[in-house]
Image 1 (cartoon, rainbow, N blue to C red):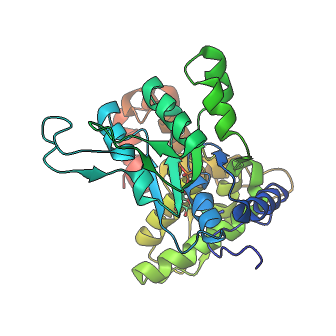
Image 2: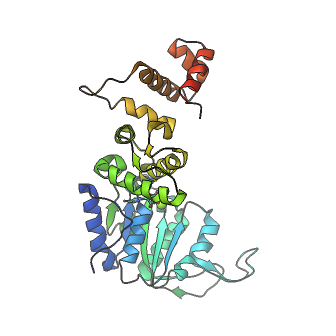
Image 3: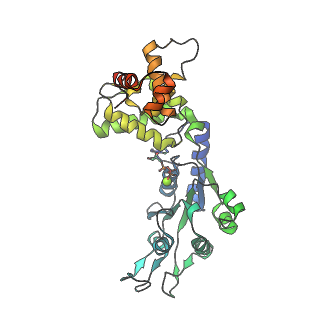
Length: 314
Ligand SMILES: Nc1ncnc2c1ncn2[C@@H]1O[C@H](COP(=O)(O)OP(=O)(O)OP(=O)(O)O)[C@@H](O)[C@H]1O
Ligand SMILES: [Mg+2]
């Protein structure tokens, strides 16, 4: 069976490399460490590995290690016996047990406390652990996929992440590229999300205007694919016509259109230049209108009028 995951868009050299690695590791039952900035698709990749593995009929269980305080996370992962602590009125199975014969996705692994790091190391070595408040040993058959947006190697050097656990997890690392490093994929990703949200919300929008594509190509995308997805979702909702235009984008993005128009292209009109300058100035000053008016050399009233006239107050 060849690797299949229709939800992953990516044809750029960096993504092809990633897809290739996912395809190789999926059937191998090895521990996988997914690295990459926020919103680059680590969870999507983890699900793809599971679905293309021999365990695909078993459960896929995800745990966000950053979401819970230490003691709760510990009982979430390993379970507890009845009476293990105040409020433990019944025995509870941990996620390691729920993921038996399937895949456990440990997300945000860089946030683990030292005690839980030690416990997870032991499970990875022996596939055994004791639920909280008991002496019972539980044995499981679980494939672990871990993910983080932190620099684990640096954390090991600083002493905040166990070196032995790092090596256990780092059997097969895969780094999801930032959106900025795979701009070739941006048009297809944008189109994919446009179609998705147009159908979801039953909206008239059919395409992205060239200015929008230009702004997309220039914007640094700190939130990566998730940010692109959110921007398009919002755009599809506010857009009243068949093409998504700059006005349908958040202000922060609108400012990135102007930088694109290089030589040889049509010069923007004076009002367009003014509009762009106002956007940029407001962005730079965290929308402080008083300061922006000063920088632009006009009164606050004048600025407010222009903001309204250009529709920037929406
Ligand atoms: N290659 C891709 N093709 C299509 N959609 C993608 C792709 N990569 C990511 N996405 C979408 O982007 C969003 C963010 O992806 P995901 O949650 O997997 O990122 P993440 O790396 O786990 O982020 P975080 O570190 O913030 O948890 C999801 O809605 C996901 O479906
Ligand atoms: Mg995630």
